[in-house]
Image (cartoon, rainbow, N blue to C red):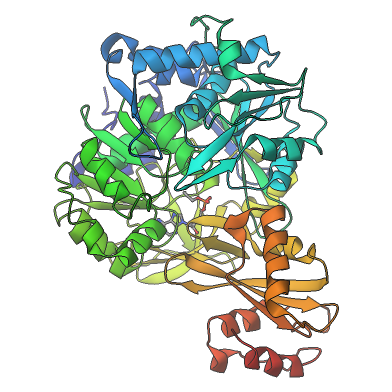
Length: 634
Ligand code: PRX
């Protein structure tokens, strides 16, 4: 039998796996898929056409992902810890769930969903803080074949409503409220506000967390703890086709409202498990801690699914890195003897800014592997992480991927392939990145820069954007015919290592979170007295990119602070506080071409304080506006 490369342990094996995956991708991925429990085996491994686009993996295969995350482990790992949940307040008791306990909780929650009329194929919105019930709720949806759409709890009622309506969700799973650092915040009331605009939702299932009295609408809202009284822990896993949707996750693009990226059951399962085990080089006894929120793709792939598929033990943290102080992550690492720690560069930069005194009290000796995700990591932060957290003995994996890719595509494999600061480095075997010139020619040599594309599908590539396949085609498959376009620019060094430069479209990456400039502008334009606006990113020490907004108002601004407050309120209501502009400059007009297009290049240069690099402004309708913008820079 050929090698299955299920665990790549050396640089030679990496190269061997890479070769095998390119020579015969179907065979390579089939070997990975054979690790799982299938209710019926696939008839064909792959069919794909990047132009339509249509990609299918493990065609005809039947499975349930939760059977692989849970039931499959009950024999050997039934008593192994699946989840260690660390609450926001370190004084509150932490919670531990074995695989058997997690299995039972998921089955019971799944029965609650069924009892409440939720069926296979229904969309279910989940709006919950980082409590164990969130993980359980997501898996419970997958258990019965309902398509989950998790919405990050920092999004506003309007954003939640938009996502519920786009997916025509029939139910919302939420909590009463949430703890976040020193604050207690509402959750259920945000859901109530959103539901004022949603007609498809028939049921709201509320988990008690903060014990607030909340408004329960008769006939629509139920408490989880009441419902659990009526169900047992036996819930057979629904038989799903490999290509049935598993979930929708909304993400921002350069145009319009966020789109619902759709991932399917079979390919996503195979890839998240494969990438999790190989990138982090996870051993059976390891404790993994990913600090992401389940509301983002990282939480989906490397909390809910990857670690449970691999039968790993993981820590889930409810709170924030700076509460009760900036040593919280390190305190958790020591407390639960974490071996693998995965976080975002923005968190590293912010903790770095709080100073080393918050790290020194902790030994961190359990750590073996460190990871980063979500945005480029600058060298200074990389070295701080390497020396102060990893004590110069832990490899760092800088993992590049996207909501659309479902799993990590470019990253070194911890301790197996070499690392280089600020470089995501090498593609995983089975992944075929290319750099293209702006006119779509493949650049084959090294020490080059280009548009990052993929020339062959991997199992967890997005299948569509919910309800709008044409948008999926246009966004990812039309710029460069026959390729998947990532939206990122990248460099490749002499050794073939990739370094991601950043987005080449109108997407801003704030603290590792994606926002479309158009989306923020439309939220700003909803503020009273605003005529129009233009938003660009600018380098920000902690967030990576900050949001710089140029705003044209109806009347000259008299009280700038009050007007800025209005605008921030409008963005908080339209999207959420996470998208509030860092800088707001009032201008009398925007630099537009004669055809009315905003010349963002000029606005970007001003925001970046590169005033001598504005380029040609002669094609502007009114070039004088540029002087005013330069002079008013904040
Ligand atoms: O620009 C890249 C950046 O984040 C984008 C994807 O954002 P999202 O779908 O929200 O997923 C984030 C978590 C996977 C990419 O297009 N990005 C992600 N990881 C890295 C990165 N940029 C540089 N280095 C990374 N490791």
